[in-house]
Image (cartoon, rainbow, N blue to C red):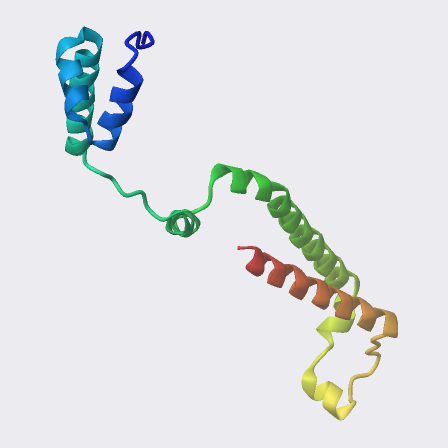
Length: 153
């Protein structure tokens, strides 16, 4: 757009913006070609602005809540991949430890019964403190990994 060369063009532009045009400025706009064009463009732009519907933008807080409610993004899934791998790995290691322990001490476990322990009638049943510590540690590790997996989901 070329700059207005008429000396009263800037004044007319401000008056059109305010919506108050003095009589002498109106007479000038009728005679001056540049000011006349400026007035026509201003009227057209005001009419266009009044015809354009005003759209109210949604509240950003609501948009954020909707985004959180309606699922994860691929970036979230990409970030969680190592954690999911470590969870599966931990479950595998714990399962392997349980299988190894049961295989190693199968004779002791096969002779085990609650009634026998209560009556003290089991002969040759030996649960050493180290075996009890292993059982306790594996049980705790199983619970920790299971709870952590449930909370991560």
